[in-house]
Length: 188
Image (tube, rainbow, N blue to C red; front, side, top):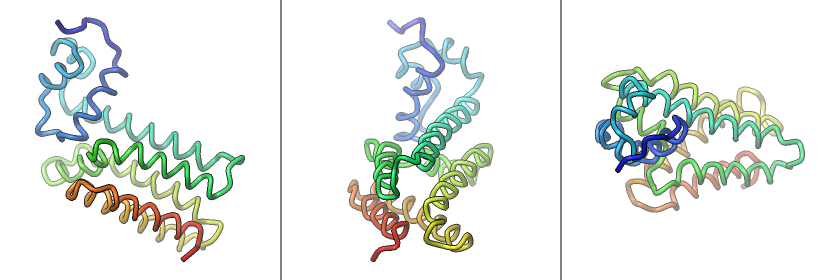
């Protein structure tokens, strides 16, 4: 029997892994409500439709990532190597989760050609990701070069995530993270 009480935050936390794994098109509101162990009608109490749910999922993921990346970068008690170790852990948590990859990239690939309704949130996520990496790069590179390298790193990481999913092998994302670390530390 489904639960009758649950919070909106709890519902979002339960649907994020499902949407990350299955995608939007293959995840019905009924299935998502069932996975949350609530009635479909209770699900609609929080989200008027699937688009609103997806927007809130993307905003939640973005907010979590931005908060944690900013916290790492802004931590004056950590040196650059320690910050990179924390960034690696965040990347592992966000993108290696059950080999399902990056919900932002997954959603962009699934919806960009059909309906750009989620495009702004996805763009903000990647802009914040690039900006965070750019801050880590600034001590060793010019402003222009740090932006170029930050964009390159995000592209490399997303490619690594894609190949990780295709081959079911973490080496691709691990290699991209190692390249990121070398670029930021300016080592060969």
